[in-house]
Figure 1: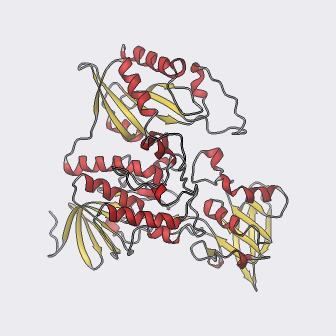
Figure 2: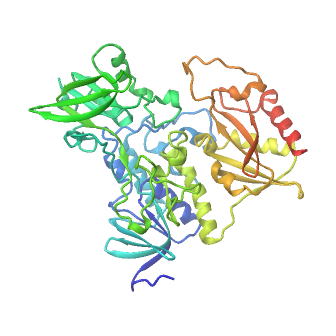
Figure 3: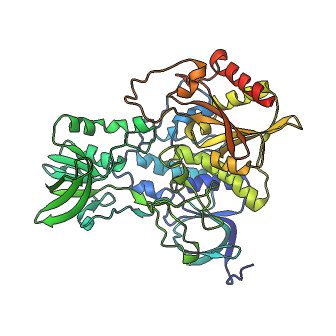
Length: 517
């Protein structure tokens, strides 16, 4: 065991950051009776939301009015509440707006931490994280702490600054003025074409003389990609103005240089789809809206986590652990590399479920608590009922489509099936790779690319369910690590998969044929 300096404080788990991810994980560990401490550099929870988004309107839905009274079903359209039982602190009590204010989120997170009496130590900035033989040594707030496990939930730590000559002349999203009048009659270049860029463009659309949004890759619209982090439909006025010849434009280009010229900026660019055409443009303002990245400066060399190729996010294993630092885990928006731009791990409505599963995996490793499962009879009728009950009810499978799944491990000799809930599919395949017969089931979208997502030809025949464009259930059969069979069930407008001809009978027949092998 590592020799620790006298007075070193020890905890099994140290959570870094008291944003929504840190608070959600704190709640789960506290409910389990685990030894944890959460460190937060600010005086209150949710520091990120005190500053961002700059124009204060969240893009996370707050659909208060639904036809369902079931709290689990309602969570499908409540993208802001943290999970807790009983659910006596819903986000809907803080805002009834479809797109709520970030100030409402700040109030909610503060109340959540106080309501549950979470073990959060505020005004405690982490200064250094070092790996030891049996865990980590963390210097924070002038004290030394030792932990078996560190979970980094601190979120984005710095702006993502692209490698552009003269980028220092651009004003960052984090520092720019949010008063539209400050851009009146100006030509404005916005670097980036994500939601922060469109948020900024939308705010100044009626004031600026000309707005250009620029990045090398084409615009990604959420209604095409089905990902909530891509550009959302409520920014449609900016796109309208581009198509209606107002001189506001969305440019696919590489910005080669930003050069100050008196009270203006000369910007040299190369178009991406124009046979190498170049241009020199003049602007009064250049704004950098290119997102954020993880700050790894507090990690010692022996535990600095490996990053994905962009350098913005840590690379993680199927259990949300660093690919190269044993015992270092990631939670929240930073833990999205394995479903990047697919499911919702970057957002509260996604990572709140990931963290429920992460808690179970941490307790299995560090506390010897077996991963929970239920036993189901190994017959087609029982398995059909289980699958349809789960896909029609679970908000985790709904939100984390194509990422989280349930697993059915068949023990033919005992005549039972072990049913595990809400595991990442890559983790499930790695975990049960020694089993000869198991299934995963989850919800999935259809093909990614359509010429027009609002004019899709549908084929409502059960044997063509794999062509479904909308969200629908998928059951996969594995042998070891090999996918050997897959069944799609037809999409449904109301997301109710209970029809005898379209859902029940095809699934029952699938299990009947398969279990007999």
